[in-house]
Length: 318
Figure 1 (cartoon, helix red, strand yellow):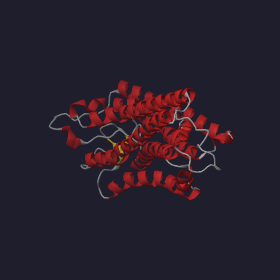
Figure 2: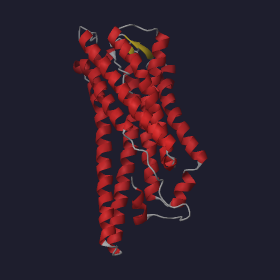
Figure 3: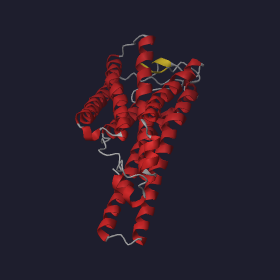
Figure 4: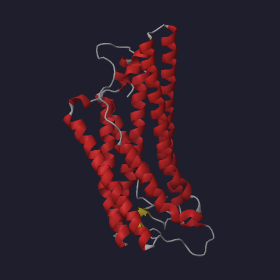
């Protein structure tokens, strides 16, 4: 989520003057920042989709999730200009329109988190399990279920709590934007629930997958030493091990940088005026991270060679 700036009056404490994000200059800068995010996201994700469409080599199992990720980001970025209009003009759209805009943003961008998690699980299964196990898990039917899950899960987390009065999508008077309504007294619990079920849970699963991949690579390297594999092969594995480590470090750090500013600022009433900037910072990083996901040209393994794993599986780390 990129522009779904939320607030909670109950968290503001005993301040006599409620904060309102109404400075024209600040609103213009944030609005233009969101427009920049939209342009970067639309271009990056469109190029990714075209690359997968035009190259048969990229028609792989993993890239199904990459395409799903790009689609969610693309739709979300196409919605961002509405937020720019709101920030620049301070025009209050109807509640129904704001519910649609905030609903799209609250579905599309969190769906990216779920897709990144599914990609991590896919790579973990591919690298650490046998080819037979991978093919058994990633059938057309199971992949369809996973794709449906990536959308249904976020939709339920987004709309079920408001249906029971916990939080509400609509127009935020505090930030004068389409977001989570600042009028609902239970907004803080809604935001906390979404944080726990989507970004935090996604980060934990994604991190665990890449850590296990790295540990598997280390073990495979040790096995190769014991088997006296040629030095050239060992050096190749070492290079791949370094690459996995760098990818793990980069993905985890970028992800944490994306979600930390907003999560910290949101629960500090005195810093509430920094909330729009925290969202801009996180949004830019997310678009840089997600738009930069490279389509993978191989699902690894030879279809006719079942039960490959260990050192051979290291060749499939991308």
